[in-house]
Length: 440
Image (tube, rainbow, N blue to C red):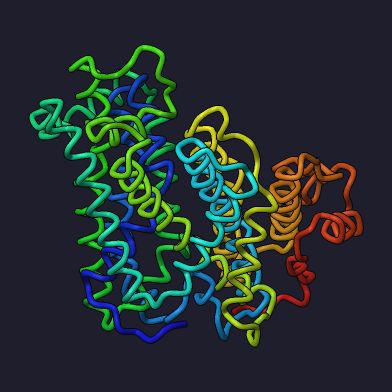
């Protein structure tokens, strides 16, 4: 890890850049055309998650390591397991951030897929090689430029009043277009992913003091809330002013709006604005790649490998598991893929590891823990292989059968071992038998 030297402002900027991804900007603008200001629900929930992270910031700063450090010196298997689940989760999220960046390059600069991914990957790798303090300074410029471009659109379309009412409209539009369950799931899952995400925790632990870590999280929460409704407001203001062409595809809404006042994407100014917006959005990809490299190093014991080599492995892995969902829109590319395919599996894994630790401490039965072990193994394998268009060879029925065991169909304990061997994912630790259990 780098030296702890970040002040509150640097921590805040890095946290904001970690959340300001392709889905935050382009996906929000795409959704605004159908659900209004409710499209900013995810972005606003991220800001609230930053405030919750401030509550846990002192703990992570004291540990000096992301979430897997909770088990350091207590259970090495749990520490490696949480790091492994984090690396799977983060690699998946990084992959879709990379896809979004590549799609922007192809959509606006006419690059072929090979050059799209090569340039996007090199940009992320290069940004990740900067020191955190310098990285914060770079992203502060890109974030300011990206926000300014959206503010220009809002001002030109007389949307200042709309922005002033945006948070209130967010609540009313969410109640109008979304169900209570959708709102609850989005809010709770996003807040949990922010608090448990190593991509955010890595900047908290680099603060120069505990106070700087907490203040940085609070500042980040306020900043994210302020910019959360900018894309939606820009789109809605343009729609009210009649400045959106009839045949414009939803995924092209934000790129069109930010360059249209400057003559379009074919002009030098237009291309510069798109580059600033893209680089600001790549801040999220760079943050995720840095955290994935750290998690992979811990999970695979690559402690002696150079940082550049591990980061390059993450970039190549992100390119290797890419999909073509961006052809259908930014939301399909980023939000659904990252949250449902990767976030859910990893979040469930984190919850399982914490729950299992509580079972150890309370001395409860091992059979239930073994059930959860098998379920998490199957879940993690299914997540990894789903991106390759395959299915794991076994199916786990969540729940317990006779004797409290997990009903695993088509894959017993030996079958699980074979799945791990062929599922392109490392083995998680096997639960010991009841008589061998020891409290942590």
